[in-house]
Each structure stands twice: as C-alpha cells, then as structure tokens.
Amino acid sequence: MLEKVTGFIVSSVDYRETSLILKIFTKEHGLISVMGKGVKSLKSPLRALTLPYTYGYFYLYYKEDKISILKDVDIIDPLFKIHEDLTLLSYVNYFADFVSQVYKESHSPYLFGLLQAVILKTNEGFDPAVLSSILEVKCLPMLGVGLSLDACINCGSQKEIVTIDADQGGLLCKKCYRNEKRYHPETIKLLRLFQYVDIAKITKLNIKEEIKKEIELFLSTYYSRYTGIYFQSKEFLKKIKPL
Image (cartoon, rainbow, N blue to C red; front, side):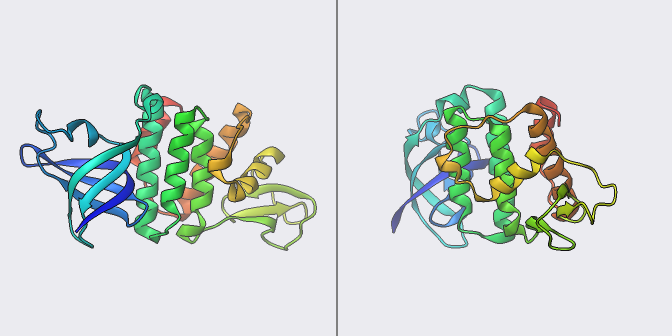
C-alpha cells in the first residue's frame, strides 16, 4: 500500500547502475531505508528529487524493518540557502549524522522534530554553530547522560554556583569547587536555557564568539567522555571552523 511520509534524505549509497538506497529520516517511522529504483538515470523525474538533504513528502511502499520502495517525491522546501553554501551544507550533514546516530541509540520520537527545526532555522539564516550546541544539549537525556543544571551536582545547593564540570556532568558550587576549569557564567546560563528552548520558536540568536566556543568545548569534551559516539562529520566541521 502506498504511504505518504514526511522526511529528509540524510544519506544514500549506489545500488547497481542507476539506483540508490536512500536513508530517510521520517516523521512517521524514524530512520528508514528506501530503494530508489532508476533514480540516477538521466531520464528519471526523481533524479533531482533524491539528492542528499531533500526535504519533502515521500510516497513509498513502506515495509517495516525492510527496504521500502520509493514511488514519488513532493518537495516541501528546496532549502536554497543551505544548498548554495558549503559551510551550511556541512553543518546540515553533521545534524543528519548526529540525529541518525542518536536515533540508533534511543529511537526517540522527538528526534525528527529536532532535526527539522535545526535545518529550517539554518536555512532561515540562524547561526548553525549555536543550533548545533542546542541540539547536542537536548539529545543528552536520550543517550542517558543528561546534564545536572539545576543545582550543584555534589551537594544540591543552588547558591554560589561557580562553574560546570564535564567530568562530573553538572554544576559545582563554591563549597564543592576543587580547581576545576571555570566557565563563564553566561556559558552556564545558556547551557541550561538550551535544555528548554523550543528551536522552532527561536527569533534571535546573538551570542558572543568566546561564549560559543566555551559551549562547544564543553559539549565536545562531555560527548567524547560519556557517549562513546564518534562523528566524522564533526571532524570535518572542525577543519572549517576549529573549536
């Protein structure tokens, strides 16, 4: 039976001479594999509609836990700004890689909405580096390693917070501080805010460069220590814009 799903093409691999096996992150079924028969052919009407990061309605013969068959595609948004900018495209590549790997660990139904929001906001011109950090903070609980950002992780005090520590995974107050790296108060404030902000409703993102770098450094350290997930796409981002 033909089914209409909403999604993003996050990757593809060649299959024989003219076909592709597409990985599509869908609102309805999460991350699925879809066979695009003949879509690489010059005569195929789907050739231009099955490129990486196509955002659209996909009409397919869906098969649970098997490879579905693509029938047609309707574009929702061509994402022109992203596709015309290598840096933005690299960030979207990271978003897709990141969310796909988190999905494999958690199968969270909220991930499609997060992926959709960060891609659309990037296309609107919002800072993809900040959007990346928000996405990373929001996905930590899905991986079972959420940050403790409401009180000191050691004693529970909400007073005299002096820093956040990647080793301990949360805030430290003055009494519990033992010469750990000190992060700027604005960094701590924003990390906490990132847990609760609705990405789709963001209207302004003005964050100082040094604060952005601190946030990125903290999250990079925390992910490497506690998740065991390696993102090759982020290594490419570092070459474009080193942390």
